[in-house]
Image (cartoon, rainbow, N blue to C red):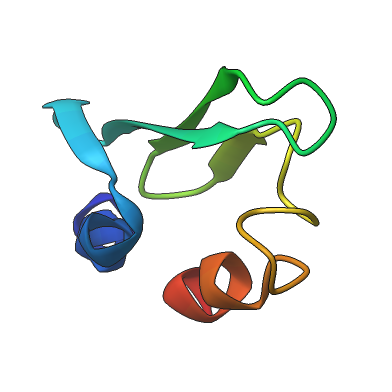
Length: 68
């Protein structure tokens, strides 16, 4: 599963270490960047993304499609 997160690159994802990804997006209320991370192992995916449903102005569609 860890290699599949390459799909996060188009939304600004950067692989910090194998399987550990980070990206930022502006918080819609604060106008400040908020960091998010994903960690993928062969058996699981952990997302810490406070803006997953509000990434950009598309309700998170681009984000969820990248992971689909």
